[in-house]
Length: 184
Image (tube, rainbow, N blue to C red; front, top):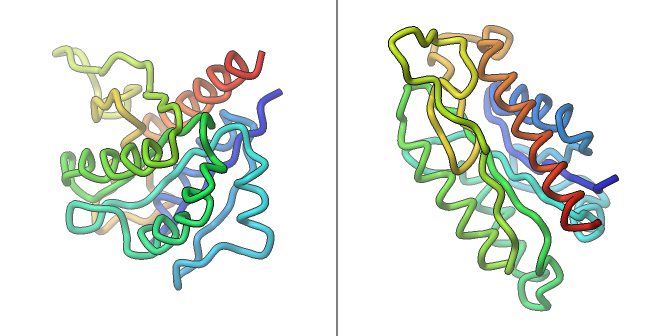
């Protein structure tokens, strides 16, 4: 079985719910980036031992949160030694609007993974984009490069749509399956 880790920051709980769904699908361990942008004790060791790292951040002002960026900058230590080379990477994000420039955040996560000489995994899902599509369908937001969710700015994390959370869960399962293929 692949050793998958989900490292994420969540400001209001929505990205945390996504992270939990991704981790459930991947059978992954969660590492929370705290409000000051720091990892918990042993977090770096856990990431170094992982076969796959799935990164998550809310999209704030068209980009990852500053707390996630602090973590990304701190990852220059494993970058310098190429400690994460050939690990599988993936990413997810959430914002209040349907577009919300979430793709900018996924591009940032992708670029970080490429800087670490990683292997990127997208959703592998077709979008729900027919006339019959409903907002709660899988991959309704329509992302190929990573999982995306949309949560209204006045909705609590407990109000996230099951379709977005199921998209995240299936995305996590895909990352774990691809990682297992690389390990095999």
